[in-house]
Length: 503
Image 1: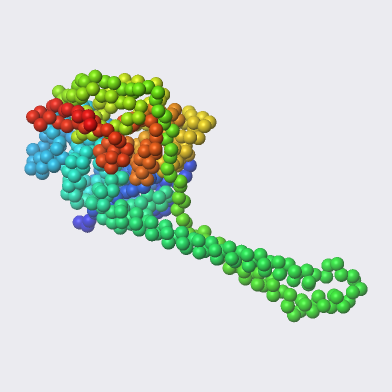
Image 2: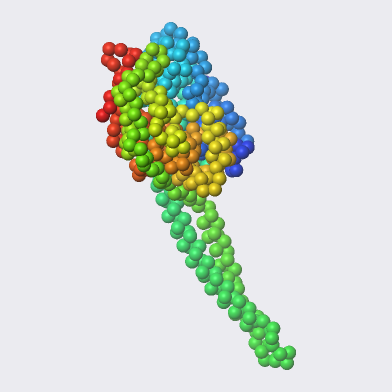
């Protein structure tokens, strides 16, 4: 039996509500090994995974893929299929996999109390245990702390089928992938190596195309000027050969015109013009064949403002129940108008639970709190899209500017029926910014966002004047933006007790 493969032949796909096609005339062959699927939010990465695993059918064209294909979505709302069997199976391979990803036997009973990072590890563990011929993973390292990221990378190395990996995690893409598929609607471009090598190749390709385009544009401009000059010469020749305006009895003048026509001396200008027009059309065609990717302006300014209140938060020392008898103990927590605070700690230590509690008691009017939760389910995503569509005037214009400067096309996003998680987060941030926040609270802000968007967001938050409260596993992101840290650690003598230290 031959090796499995995925083959796309002249594939076209457009969502019914979309103003333009997602994919147009795509032909690719994908062999076993990991292939990265990269691109900006909303360009169709998830759609590509669903087409390649048979969840979606193309409008035109043909896709061949193994029937034993599995797609793992970004969201972690639902218990993975066959999770019970995975936990209850008593085999060496299954035990090793559960141990590698630190998946506990009691998780089968308390899915709703698991953190998103714990759910993601479970989702990946079950997928690898099923060992399909095609495994399509959508953002596998979202919500994952640094230790778990290493465990997941090691586990994914053990997969020997066709792997499709949507991720904005550069380290994972470089470590795991033998090639990357760059989604640039309506095309998909395959480049060898991980994301770093692929982006270098893409940069070189763009520079080469830009150089060719500018060269051909200069040639076209030069030919156009020459064609204009020759047209003027030809017009003068036509006038010299024309008998219009001559007196009927002026036989000498008429004889000169006839002689010019017979010798063809004055017709040379017209012939040269026709030759030049042909060269000009060819130059125009050559110019149009070079498709230089449009470069959109990125970068935003977030108009936060300082609160006039001395304290945005004062919470007395206390504890929070985290489920499964776990508790988080924290000291007195204070947030001032200019504070920029990071909350750090391992998965399952209560960071999201704490931040939800804080948002409820902030000493700030609700409309001046911009809160981006760690995970937004499908129903909440639809509600956010509806809120965005209901904005009018300056607020709508500002929202569209923010979304555009974060790397998404706002018209396409607002006309979509199901925005991606990354686009939903951009929309929610943009809606919040239209109300000039006093504090921005973000739980894992870099999850689901593409790399250019993360860089833009980081720069904008750096320049924003309001208070920040950020939960993230992205150390560089936090180091650049925050000045105080609330760090959560597990007590060494207990796996049920977590303590927060403020520094």
